[in-house]
Image 1 (tube, helix red, strand yellow):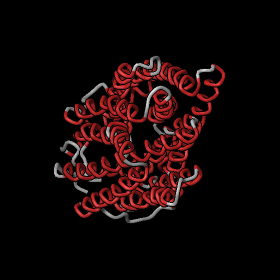
Image 2 (spheres, rainbow, N blue to C red):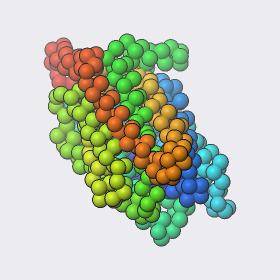
Image 3 (tube, rainbow, N blue to C red):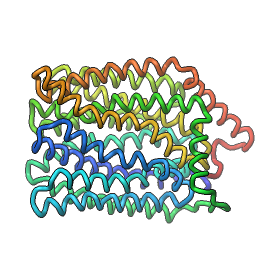
Image 4 (tube, rainbow, N blue to C red):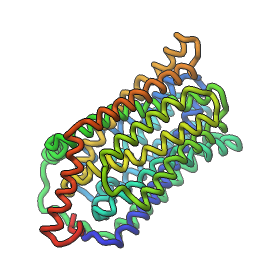
Length: 430
């Protein structure tokens, strides 16, 4: 497919659909989390909801990545987005018949996660299909903003909706967003032409090539493994931030606090969407992670809502620099024809840290709260502070790994070589 500046408009349409979808998903995640917390008062039960919403998608990332390289990526996005709404619909039907049991909420969440697995590798690879290398950094800033919308807009919207209605209204709104995202993907699909493969490799052979694309580059593999450790610490914050704040406030305050904190990501994502990062990607990566770790640790040291919002803002403001740099270093070191399956493996390995976090942090917070007598709020605070300190340490360790630093040099060499051989910037075909 020819890469032109016109494709940036198609990317923006696709991005807008995912932006809306992220807000809808954030509404449901926030609402169901509060619903479970108010019924059980347990951080472990909230963490289990997050765990079940994440694990199926993680397990299926690798085969979904292979599918993204074998079939129409935009069609896979439409199928994944559309069918993931079935899980939300199931929960809504259960609630319309009375209060939904925990197992019904967990089952519906799992169903959504299974079909959502088709989306991420196809979406990530489609960005590579549409854009030139020079446009990646700006696009990544917008992608970070779309991902942050579930923390930026969803909490305050959900907090308001829950004061005038109940969880069922939130689920209905989320279901409606699926239609909009499917339409956006369909419009983009009609506007581009992708060359068909002349041969079809065996499925597991394709999967193996994706693994070799990652494991064959030692710097890339090191980056992904360290990213998994980072996801572990960040996953703790994602789960335990809410029960910590809820231990001394209400759902409306929680929604406002989450939105105020996540606005940090909005600010820096907009800046990166306009300016992008031009160089020193490794430095931006580890420094962004270190600042996020500092913000995370300070977030849980006080029950002052204003300070919580300030330190939460710091945490989220630094993340886009890290996400943008990590995405660029990985994307530019993977051949275009292997993007889908390679990103499947990258997502699987790096996000294993989230699985560990979601599996143990709730139980850990409840245990610490019982032992110290501080309850779930105190246990959550101690766990978050410890994880923030560990994130800073992991960032500093990353800065000293030579293989990761060499990824930036490798990316520059690939770009220079392509300019010499084609006489163009990066306007080739994919």
